Length: 119
Image (cartoon, rainbow, N blue to C red; front, side, top):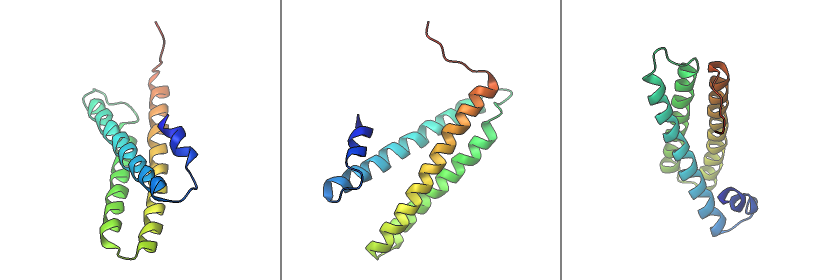
């Protein structure tokens, strides 16, 4: 529902869009990263670890680096236009790394033979 609401306002201007964009980026991306860390924590307890553990750890570290870079740009840049441009670039990069997380998860499930079924 929130994704549909967000997509409805894409390309619009104004304060409402900015609030929704900040909320969406902060809450969704941070929550997904925390869920990913939880998954990595569970995988680290398995012996042997799943094949996707190490690549997933690399993606998580890259994602964290981009997130910290986003914060650095926000606080180190005084020009609003430059800050907006850099934040936009970093947010798109975070989106690509987020896609990499889900791709790695799907690959790991496929490789490990994991299946979802209704009972």
